[in-house]
Image (cartoon, rainbow, N blue to C red; front, side, top):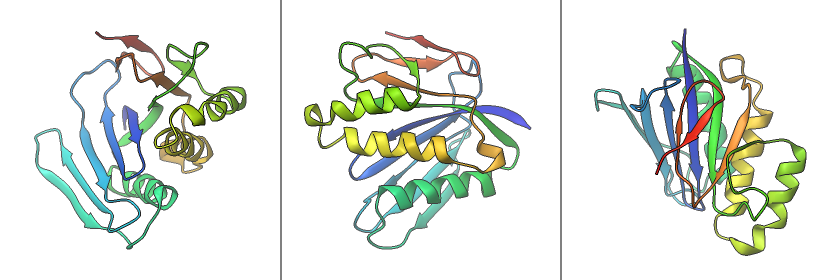
Length: 166
């Protein structure tokens, strides 16, 4: 099994994802689910750029259903990979959350307080973070979830560690 880091960027109408090797900068897999809430489609490419998924999901599927589908798809299709950590871009972390942090219930509550600052993004990002934390599937068992503020760029540097990249 190959360790991998799952990066997500959930929005109101799309869910972008990539699986990176710890310490690597080229993803094993990257893709997105577009048209969430209307006619969602999962598209993914492998490291070589070859299409590995081009699927239509149930019409009208919301972000929760699309994320659940993505996690099931990852577990079913990518059997050689073990997700050991995950990260998610968060539009507003406020003054307290200006750098990547491990997510716990207190951090989620803090992010929820900031929803008025980014009503079109923050609720979807929080929903994705909660869904990842609740994921019980063995191959997606996470050691930690980190969030980052939109004003910072980060790149994976080892399982559970993140460094800033300008």
